[in-house]
Length: 329
Ligand SMILES: Cc1cc2nc3c(=O)[nH]c(=O)nc-3n(C[C@H](O)[C@H](O)[C@H](O)COP(=O)(O)OP(=O)(O)OC[C@H]3O[C@@H](n4cnc5c(N)ncnc54)[C@H](O)[C@@H]3O)c2cc1C
Ligand code: SF4
Image (cartoon, rainbow, N blue to C red; front, side, top):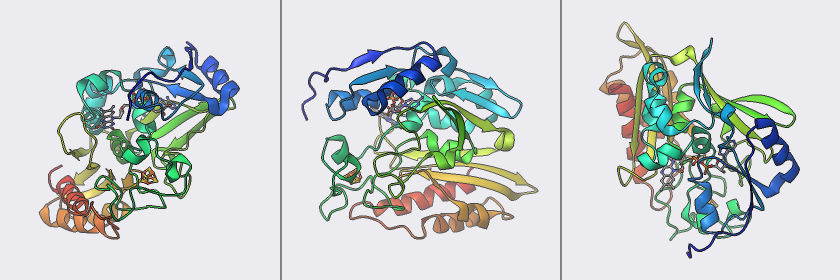
């Protein structure tokens, strides 16, 4: 695809959240929210998405920073992945998120890419990114889910016309930590569980999250619930840097007297949303965190997987990652 001049847009750079919300309300579907730009700019450069107006959020200081609260920690949506990776509080209590943030792309991308952008990024299916008129782009076919379709990166679960997967490395970590997402629009604020923030194609095939055009994700809250737990994050990609996960796993586990008291675990890269593995959470409770429990957990995790022509390998990969999350945390 030609990577030529970007299509013209009007760039608006508010310094206050209320001004940004007013601009989004005024421009509706014509406006695009810009944070670090690592997802957005490739859309613009490929001229696949051509917003009339871009509202840059990076000048809004109120959307940055990490602060301890009475209930846990609150992270401004514009906080960069590098800041999260190195923050002493996150590393001490919620190291799972620091670890996941540190596995995104490359240091250059993490220095600019934000947590809000990471969880709000769009699908990485190459047919869609190249501007083909597939279901997700408003058309009536899926190019990946065909006998010859290039679908080794695609879904094992939850497909509904579209078989794209959740590409984010931080999303499963936020689900494992039971985070919630604070969303503002010109009508006020709402708080949504991380698990409900991500949506699959059966709910809305053209969006990956509940965010509406007038919404800004302002912060992510992580409660105390899993602070200091035994964490595990692992990502397997074709390359060790600058690459998306084929499958990743994030888990938080509390062990007492040698037995798993509670576990929360999610995988990315296997469904359009980060997949929380509730069955695994239930069956390991009361068992030792060893290889045997891990093997059982791995097998349960992949039950019901529906592979496409070229992604059968993801079943074994997911099974092994879940096993290691229990055994090696
Ligand atoms: C080469 C390359 C490799 C990558 N590798 C990985 C990887 O390994 N793992 C991974 O997880 N990601 C990866 N990414 C994806 C992505 O660039 C990064 O995850 C980055 O964190 C995105 O953040 P950003 O701030 O740059 O997003 P932006 O591009 O600014 O925004 C992304 C999307 O989120 C929306 N958005 C941003 N902030 C908000 C907000 N506060 N409220 C509402 N909507 C908002 C934007 O409108 C846009 O649709 C990669 C990207 C590239 C280009
Ligand atoms: S997997 Fe989804 S994004 Fe990819 S071609 Fe099919 S409908 Fe489009």
